[in-house]
Image (cartoon, rainbow, N blue to C red; front, side):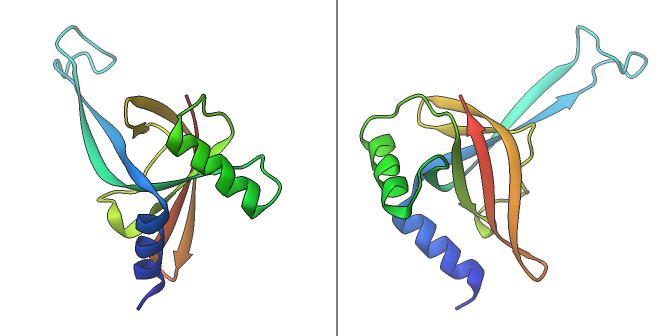
Length: 129
């Protein structure tokens, strides 16, 4: 079993369903690449599982407690990291993407990656509402 397989298994076991929402802009008038009324933006969601970690917690028990509170009753999310298995995504997340957790859409502030050679094992997303 590879490190990527282990990450997928553990995140699926401890996480909950989320999506990474990516946006693509299409220029409607090539003569106006700065923008025109005919420009359009489309979004696509890449479904996966995410583990929410309170980065302000001091130890693992406090972090898991914070995660369980988020699962039972979602609250304002500030200072939260979300771990997503790298193998589950069709493209690496970026700071222009959004994280969708149920009805909440959160801004991705920073993306970190844990690598196993050339394979992205886990993406660490710092998010906020």
